[in-house]
Image (cartoon, rainbow, N blue to C red; front, side, top):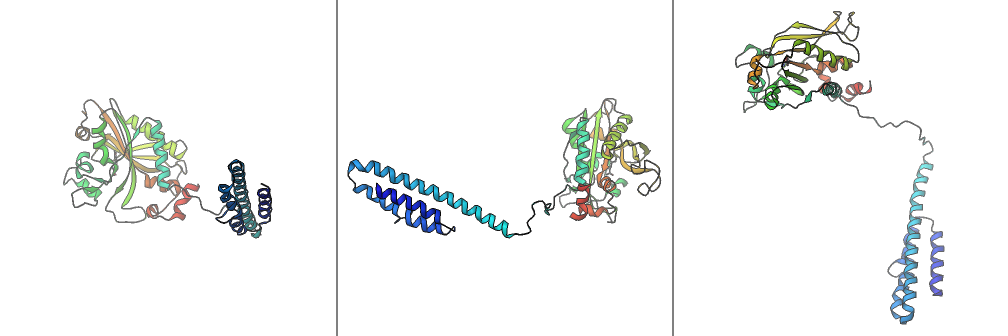
Length: 341
Ligand code: DAH
């Protein structure tokens, strides 16, 4: 037992005297390894007379455990010291300097989309999804654009080998949504659209729209104006006036072009509104009876309005982006500006 105590005290002293991490392996080999002093003592237990076996065995075990945890503690001290040494070596380390790690930001399209979704959700609309690859029927026939109709020319697109098309507008989801929910219905459906366009600063082959529909008994143009004004006031964070001009779209009757009072000069005239005070923003109208009928809704019982807001343009206006192609460019320098604003 005396020898035990001596070994323990010596081991503790050796441990305290270790100076570097590597000294710990020597310590381990000397005391706790296969031929270490403590291990040797444990081997002796079996040769002791029975009455001594128990106390001796227990003591050696205790010593072994104590030395192990003391060694772990020492290990932690060395690890801590290593970090401190590193910090001390870095003379100019200033923890108060702001991080140079760049922050991510949302794409301008996502920012506008989220804002429009938020406001329509708060007014009781549901948010639906549309397909990017659509049947020709949904994209054209179901919204009152039959085969060979001249309106198809305005929306030439990419035709797939199986006869389907890359959808040219979010209106392509109208029929599916009417069939799914019937009337009454209040839904918006954002989506990516594609057209075979000549590319320039304001025309892209891939762009974004949000379609909206409200169908119920007694829905009128007054409802359309109300919801559009609410949405635009929320997006521009100021009261926006709207006006409707007649516009032709095969899926609405009457159809309109909705203009907004220029949010930048409040209608006084500036570069953005080309000094006219108004900006053409969103085509809309009262859903054509044919479209309702094809969606399984009786036009004698219900009416509805629809709009197709091109929010690539809205994002450009809001963030003063003059080149539409930047939106799909992955140019982080340009696109992160919106998030910072
Ligand atoms: N789908 C049309 C387009 O992309 C936009 C549009 C016009 C949608 C009038 C509508 C609407 O819902 O009522 O050119």
